[in-house]
Length: 172
Image (cartoon, rainbow, N blue to C red; front, side):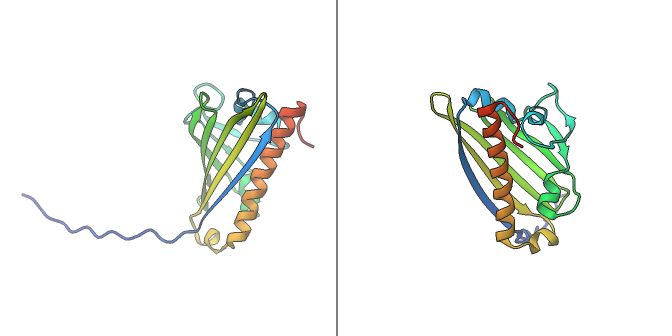
């Protein structure tokens, strides 16, 4: 017996979506920079970095690596929140990586990072972040506020990475 059912589709709620791109030049090759985009290696160059590794076959970053951290949530929402990072793509041959961050169900951030050689021992590093609000609190935030917070994160990370690659020391 075949039953015909009518399916009604509802459009998604209009959640806020904000996109920001930051590009920096670093005096180091992509091959030197790329391995540093890893929660374990970030202990070397991100001040006060702490994380909890949830899943990794190799013990370092790779496609499907999952880790938690407590720094991003308070930056965006000004209260303690755990952020879960999933490495969606880890491509060491093309020096690109894609993360999906879940900020405790309040927002999802898609972060694409790509390193391209632009000269001898010089790389262009592009950080492309897309923030999508998931709840009323995130949707009530001003777009400009979210943009500034996104830019602060990417500018800080790119400067800390540049400083480490060029000096061998953590930014203070």
